[in-house]
Length: 200
Length: 260
Image 1 (cartoon, rainbow over the protein chains, first blue to last red):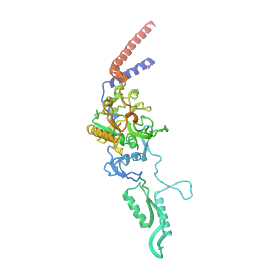
Image 2 (cartoon, chains in turn green, brown):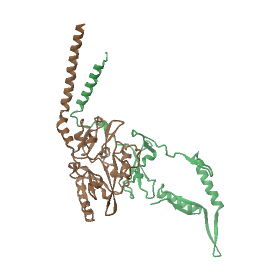
Image 3 (cartoon, rainbow over the protein chains, first blue to last red):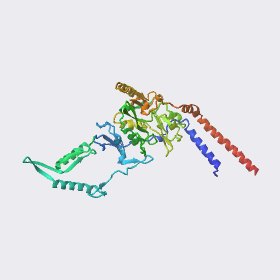
Image 4 (cartoon, each protein chain N blue to C red):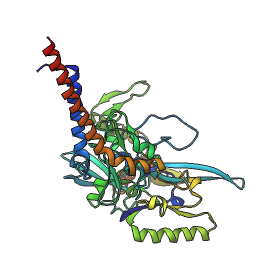
């Protein structure tokens, strides 16, 4: 069939008319425009918001090991399901949206250990085993070198068993239970300078 | 009137923008690059990527600065201007009484964007479709509350039954008036025949940047009542015209071949 300019125009006109006719009088929404619930078939995991010291509860919806949504935990006594603007954006730590609204992995998310040696100006990638071993080794060495068993108070030797060379900072990014364990661990090593970054 | 509504108590809003982020997060709307325009309000206007935002308005009163904040977005009006303006019926009323955009039917004519008295409908230039707040239709279907109401930490946005919340709103207005906010008022009860976003305002609506007396414009009403029913006629006329054209050109072609 030879497609002339005239017949092409006629064909498009007829198609447009047919399409418009089809839409007239139909008031029910086409099912395809309603997105299925994002958190359908997901497993819920509870966690604590990582951003400040309030410690709001967060529910993470996970499907096949991939996080699909995060929102306030309604059963949590502190926030009762609400979250602030930072907490509401939890999901975007893992995934951000491109221009079309499709999730893509957040390129700014840290997924491995970065190590900057003393005096160095750049970071290098390290694995977790190396990092944890190094941290443990340095804590042990510093503690052993600066350990004070007793101090002289008014001419009296008082047993203190402490180290003043290390200070320990807890984290609002951890749960209460984890922070309790960190505190116990610091005390066990003789660290007396213990603080926490909760700032609210 | 919607049976399930959101009560937005602007006097409780602290402007934390949790609702705004929760909306973007749940509906998977990308961020927008914006520039400072002299207000904390950001993004400065609604778009296909910003369905709702916290509106900041400040004014001077007795030598002091009064800072007013409220969550604003689609009001889901009962007498919705967008629904009247839409020529294809892409804007429809859901079973919850809210107004949604059917993106399959939307032809991107922008009539709803122009007709909306609250200017809350965004137009997506990439897909050529109108986009706006859906009242979290998918969440309502699953028995959850909208993402913004879920996130609000001060209880400024409450989701619930229309009758209960109207009583609550009236109590709150009385409370505010007793506390010295003599201009405290309810907004959205009579506006546009009632909206699914009911506001308790501590001051006059215009101080919050809300239209004082929103109306469906006369043009929209005329268009909706007089011209929209003629859509079918127009289609029939076009079809008839094409048919006449076809038969006429056939005649000419026949005459041409006979002349040869």
